[in-house]
Length: 288
Image 1 (spheres, rainbow, N blue to C red):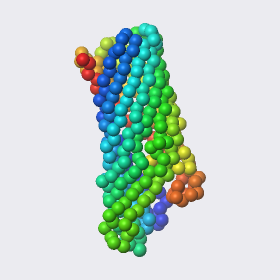
Image 2 (cartoon, rainbow, N blue to C red):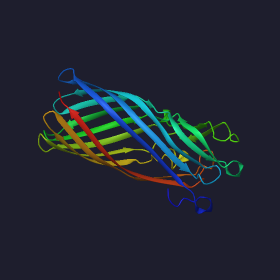
Image 3 (cartoon, helix red, strand yellow):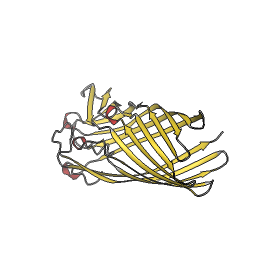
C-alpha cells in the first residue's frame, strides 16, 4: 500500500493472501432426467503481511500456510428439452495456518523479537447454490444461479498467535486478534452460452454479491469488497477431452470505516479501502 500516512511519512504496509484449490469430480447419470455429482477438493493457502514493522507495535509476518479439505455434492434435473434445474452444496474447509514467523517491534523496550507464528480460525466457507438453465435454441443457452456463502462462520475473529520468542525479555506468548465479523453473502449470476459448432463455444457472464465486509471492520489486509463481476469464456471440445478458459474482472469498489475503536480499526475513522480484481480460470474435463 503506497502513500500511507505512517509516523514520519515512512513505513511498510503490505499483505499477500493466496488460495489455490484442486478439484476432482465425477458425475453419474441416474436416468434421462437426473444426474448426480460428487467432488473432493484440496486447497492450499499461504499468507504474509507487514504492518508498520519499523515502528514500535508494528509487525512483520511471513510463512503462514495450511492445507484444507472440502467436499461437494450436486444434483441436476432435466425438466424437459428446454429447461433444467441444478443444486449443489460445498462443505466448509478449515485452514488454520501455522509454520510462520512473526517479528514484533517492541521499540526501546526490547527491539525486534522473532516468534513462531500461527493463525487460528481462518477457513474457506460452506456454500449452497441453486440454478436454472434455459436452452432457447440448440445453440443458445441462458443460465441463472443464486449462491449463499457462509462467511460468518470462518471470518469472525482471526487470531495471530506467537510462541517461542528469541528473547527472554519478551512475553512468552502473544496474541493479536483481527476482528473480521464478515456477513454471509448472496451472489446472483447470469450467464449466456453460444455454441458456434460442436467443437467451439463462447460464454458471457455477470454476477453481483454485496460485499460481506462490514464497514466498521474494514481492513486493508483483507480487502475482499468487490461486488460486480463480468466474465468472458471459451470452450473447445474434443472426442475425449473438453478444455474451458475464462477471464473474470471485478470492478473497483470502495468502502469507508468510521469505527473509532483502535482495537477494531487501528487506522482510525475515515479509513477508505478500494479494490478491484482480475482472475483467470481453466478447467479440463475427460469423458469416459
